[in-house]
Length: 245
Length: 224
Image (cartoon, rainbow over all chains, first blue to last red):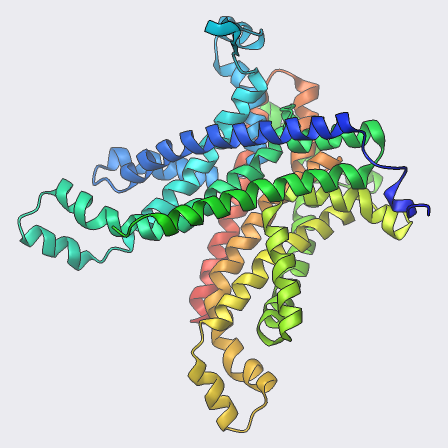
């Protein structure tokens, strides 16, 4: 039986599957690094926007609305092409040449490529502005009366935050935060435009080499589904297993 | 410097090669967003209503479809539409249309969930009241449930339209000459002012998105 015409000729050779798997690993690694940095920066941004100090509030607020209201693609391009103008030439030269450190037992560590760094920076800044909004929304769900009651009991500001606000907020924040992490996985796909060899990039590469568009995108889509749904399941399982604070 | 850069390239940034019959730049970005926005809104309403009123089987298959669409990157969906729609239909489809199709589809998926949630947020008592008045389920939906539900949903619609406007920049990857694509062309030609070029582009998107948000808020304020 001949396959339908839209399927093209045959199936992907094993080494192309290898490319796609490699791309998926790159996507996962980039998403993990972005999630870590974005969470830390998101906490800082949230704290700054909660601060009574105008000098902290306004820069953080401006940062968030700038990053939330412009396309991620433009931000990625801006950092990739624009960083050269911001950094001294010597630094750029160092960043653009490969570096490797030897580790014990024959392992070695590569300094990431410039594309990878620009992608990581752009995605982290973008995601941090969204994460800080989720954190702020979670903290705001704790009723004001509870804080007042805690203060009346003689608790310090830190104690109020640690024992009253945080435990309740964490429960509310978990799900939206998980949503942000899956968004990070999906957003890493944009870094293909600056040449980061993640899953979308490799699917396009496989497509142009083999001309098997359907197969290449089907495998890539499945891998994305695995990564995203895997993250969702892992996150909600942890939520169920954790004791209620 | 930023001013001369803007002056030299303003026409191209705003409408691309409109004189040659190929609209591009900001004009095309707005066009793509409007077309996909209207389709996504209609699709989202239909999807959300189907998720509420449909048979259990229809609901199940729609839910799976929505979940899958939400779990894959927009970029991937654009590839699917760009490379496979022409093969499936056996005709040459312009890149712009495939991008509009992809953006409409994914945003309709997100919106149908908002619509479903917005309808679910209206109390059961309202449905019963409709039934008690002798209305059918569809009449109740149309006259009792939807009017307040739509008002509650407006903020999530506005957010989705803003997301769509930003995501229209992804048309870049399949070579559609919208705003971001045109900007990278200018950046490649000028070579020396990447910060300024993409800075201008970012500001333009910022103004568009804030404008959309602002007018949306006003609309929401008036409908209360």
